[in-house]
Image 1 (tube, rainbow, N blue to C red):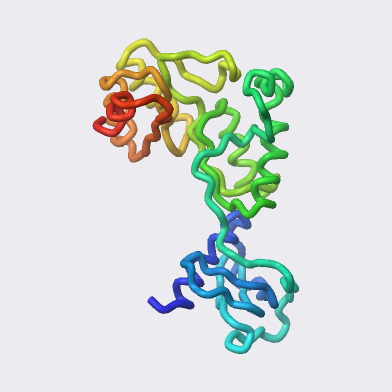
Image 2: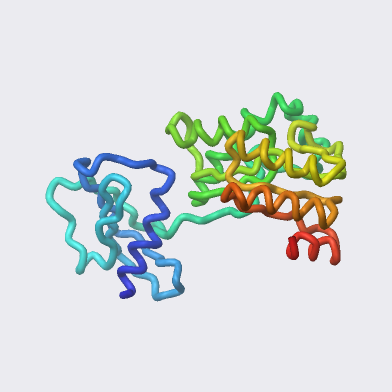
Length: 244
């Protein structure tokens, strides 16, 4: 694969949050910016990126990429054009805080989650994050994900876990953000519930046994869903999740 072919594939991630558009839409040309390809190749000054619908048509130096007649031109001089960033551990309702318990009390608990998500999702997108994985929230995050997908509100492409699974309840977050289990059978049942509700990934939190991790991963993998584990405790707890 050539340098510019790789560039086209990577830069396409920038537009993932815009959604699919008809291919007969006009071409958009981003012109004049400094283009980074994400592969640590030399930056391209005075670049051109051609977009139509949800596809990158061409990208490269201005002297190699011709802007078609009638294209809508967006002047990116003085700006950096780069692939969208991917945040693999987000909590979209967090806007900035020093203490979890005080923060959730400040926003009013579960009632304040969605208004906070709307603000945070917009901030993420403005910071260049075009995909985010939210690892722990209430089931309302599913509706928030769909609001972004439909274009109702701005935000990155969102993948969500919903409430995490744990044997150790915490009082610093709203209770709606966690499933507390007492057996491996219950862990499997909550995993099934989460998948049926429409989550993209399962989050297993602290306090679980090796049998719990196996029940969660086996149940999820049978449904084609991946699992994550919050590794904030020393081995062998992390090893339990790896070997499950």
